[in-house]
Length: 277
Image (tube, rainbow, N blue to C red; front, side, top):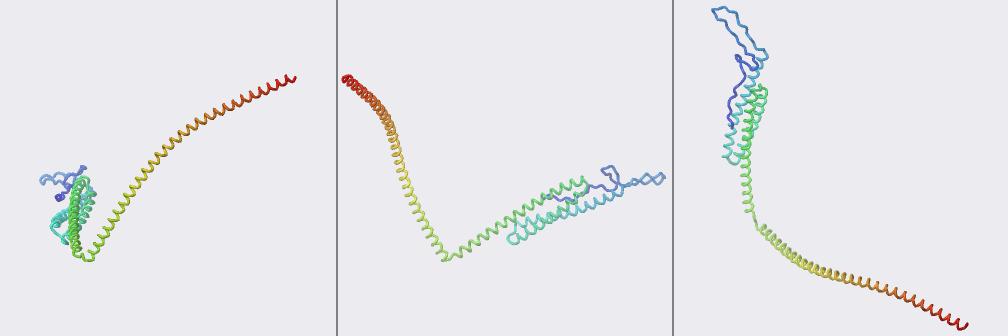
């Protein structure tokens, strides 16, 4: 936890100089023996005096909030330390008190932030830096209390689990044992069915392999038949060409024979004509 130092006001009071060059209320007394004329008195404007009083009031308010925060922060740190040494309901109560105190600390920090932002820029920068340290310390405190609370929850969960486990072990009866035996028997039957299914699956796999082999052989036979048919097709084509050639030769021979018969008939007719003539 960062040290909480008392806030030292940086606002000038009467008799000092301001950053804009104006001076506070000053008076000069003439020496008693010499009746010299009085020096002119330079009086600050009323609005500046009002601002001085306002800033002083605000700085006092900030100091009050800061003092409360420091006291509360120290108290919360002690409670966190003591919470780690407690157990059960006392620890829960202490954690609840710390969480409530953290909410109050956050409220004080917000109030200090509002007060600091209304102060002059040079003072505001210092106070806002201090507030950032306070917020960081408060976040560390939150992380610590969360860790303690989670440890408490984990311990409570372990205790509850152990208690429930012991209660369940003590509550085991003959009926539950019978149910366990029935469940075991069902598991054994299920295992038998699984083994039967596996055996059937292996038989089906063997049958499938056999069918694949038969199909492969049939495929080879079909390929061989296809090759044979292709050879027969070629032979038929050759035979068709031979038959075509034979048909052409026969047609030619018919024409030749017909021509020769015609010549012979003409010759016979001529011979008979000349003989009869």
